[in-house]
Image 1: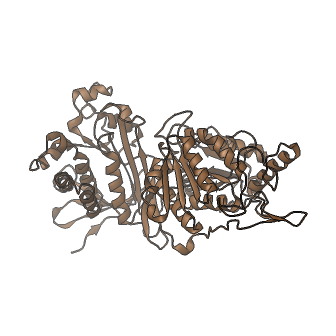
Image 2: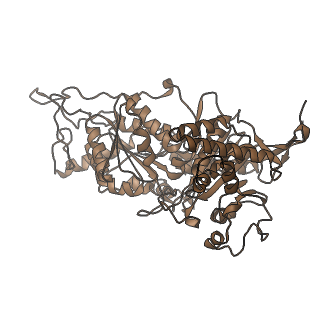
Length: 630
């Protein structure tokens, strides 16, 4: 028996839909090319776990995807309030996509606060699934609703699906020896089961995950699996959901290979481990927990089998101090933090510049200033990375563009640090750190050879013929000084923050020597070999959109839309921010107008204007959220 498929139709959001009616009077199935779903609820409702599981099943199905977890800023805001709303947005498609999407097609709202906090983002016609059990008079008043939006007609422009999620979950779990409160906690699994039915997501992975997560609590494990299955069955049997949807795998979006879903922080951690293996050096992380960087510490602490040592210090200064000591001792040394921590680490970064030792300083940027917005994203630390130290203390700066690209950016930062004997700033941000996308697992032969040669003996001959070791005698190509592991006989040398004499490394207050050392350290950074900037300009445009970091996805999606509408537009994206690619000036000179979108008030634009005398136009957003392509 064959299925009948109607002609595809294009929706207002640009997605293509076909309708497929199953034989025997069963429910219709509509084919979509992409969907954007947002799960939203109280911070205790398990929305991040629900989104993670839906994402994992979507990745295993073969869709391209991009996610945007959005956490409350407060550790535990009062339940049912707007500050306590947690959400997780997932965009998945049968083709190549770049962002978590501008506006959800589907909102799952677990309470009135979740509905009110997110309704403004929904386009007309979007579907809303609400947990009606939470729409009590008190809960409505808590967020400023005078009457229930489920009854007053304010949601008539949307496809509203009122579902008593809590009641249905408790009913499904009545056979288990659980209190009502314990049973209610599984309502997120009921919602996950319902959405899994609606979008034909695999279920085996989620059930396997639940068996593993609650292996020591068999009653809780069984209850969550039962709730998940009950949600699936509810979708299959209820008359309120007459249609389910299919989004085919993105078979043409990916090069051949083995893929997994990965977040930016996980990719960065894997990149650091890979760099240490490729360099044949132990990896040392000295870190102090700080949102949104802490996951890197958590992940690296699991990999002692790869020679990884992690040290949770008592504060930010101790974390980088221990890492710099590890660099002196011959390790690939890393410290991870966010913007406020970079400020505290700045003196030790300057010490690393003076000592000329390889050190990776990973800054997962968040909203500032000061403590700022711990759970929100921003890319406003660029000028701090460039100049946030006393004296002339140049530091290379590298920035990944997508969550998966954090892996390659970590390898690149390690290459620069090891080759040129310098601290390197790696600027990720909260959006990249917590967001996820498919990542092709590279073959080992694709990874760069990062092995280094330590100093092993004298490298200078004095006028009287004596052979000695000079710790600041430089490689003529890279200007890097030798890396001597402490304890190597004959290679004893002085370290410290006071200016060094060229060559010998002895303390020097000589003005001419200081001028020479300052210029030499700057020349070393300026001379770092980085790839030329690639420009995407198929039509000879007059306007260039220049970005860096996590703006890559929204910028690229916007450029695609403009070109589809017939506009000519060029795009380029910077990974290396210090030094800039050598051809950047020539690229900028080719265009009448240069537009620089940034999640700050124009920091890259300021650098571009100063260095190249180009009238770069800033397009800025500093609201704690990534750009939308629109």
